[in-house]
Image 1: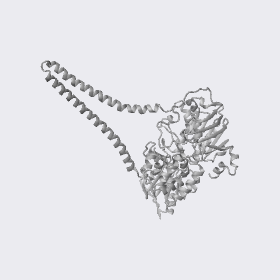
Image 2: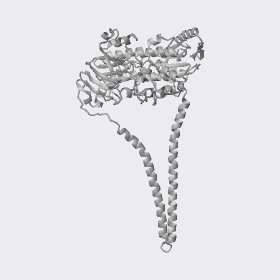
Image 3: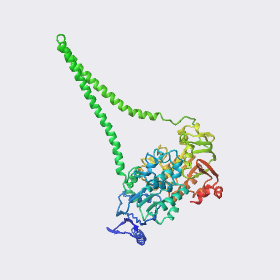
Length: 603
């Protein structure tokens, strides 16, 4: 039995419609051949087409170069975008994994269940096949740990696996996985691919968007997107664009919990409305009390006037009555103003709470023309995110020479990104870190960070123009910016004042971050897994930039993909916050049971 996913490609030639529909493997192969020939003949064709066929239990890999539309194809299948031309039919229910992990502020368990009923056996099996079971046991609160600020307290690999576990936990017919293995180290990625994608989902349709040749070769079907097959620029230009929450919306819709979230929103809205209504009722009740108070005073004054009838003149009576009205009016205004002031001061109190938070110490000595040699030395460095938690980095002692290219390797959650965070003082740490024999704790925070360029694992793009993204402070000329753009072959843009499309591919966002680092011309450059989610061509380009454009810099690169590991001078292998191997890559690869050797063999 088979299920068919069809996008009926519509090609326009002299106003005539040509429709191709596939229902089995042979027709699928014929359709690909025919479409390729038609597109080759139509030199002015502006249509894009894609034919998907998958057997139950089969894995279909969707691959292609940067910006080819891999993620877009999956979102089209979820009906997030209206297909530009032709018809779309999806037979079966869908579960979707976004390329950028989307987590919400709640427990890890609630992020995985996401509105589904709790089935203990399935839940534990999902944790196991997503390589989360053991890691969650190491956390103080286990799967009850709270996800903070979109997952700031988790590694990207952990966020990616929680994101995957959420989709896999749901019982669906079709699973759309958008490059979900890119953030994982080789051993974990292989485990998840074999145990989760191939075994646990063996009776399901799986469509995996990936740039990894290894997983493409291990898939049952392969769809390659490229110019002539899918013209991504045309699709991009016609598809609707929303902001960064798009991944979350797609996950919500494919999980079919819109009603649940709508009810939760209504509950919050009802709570707000009830408090507002209570405030309004109290205000009206207070007005009634003031009115009653005024009536009591008037009655008392009238009785007093009657008792003193011979001694009270009309003028005195009028004066007393007018003062009573003025007094109650002033009293009404006073109490209303005090009530509103008290209510609004709560907002001020909340803001003041932020001022009581521990501030970064930005004091220190600014050193001119620093750093010169860019030699880095870690001495007995320990790091713990909270004082009552175990150290995530332990007893780090190593040195990096000037202009040395250093690769930091290790499994997911081993402490690689934490190590980098100490270098730019994102967290307080024990021990000392020296750059050119200067303890970085003695330097002003802003000064230190301005001397180090960081290309983060999650590329940061600002809402604005290309110029504002590459040169936020406006310190560089147009020629410098265009030179950086040319270096990374980012031909997508024609104008520096062109506004950035927030739905660029991960590769395109990453290249913009590389451009940002290029024009800064800092002598210390950090690449934090920037090659994890990119295709092989972009990975090769980034490696070329490191070798040529950052040749005079000290470079530290966190790596999962080890294809270019021999291009580095020094490799540090990290496991559970400790450096377990260090040395030149050639020597480490010769160790039969070495961790780097094992990781390299699994690539």
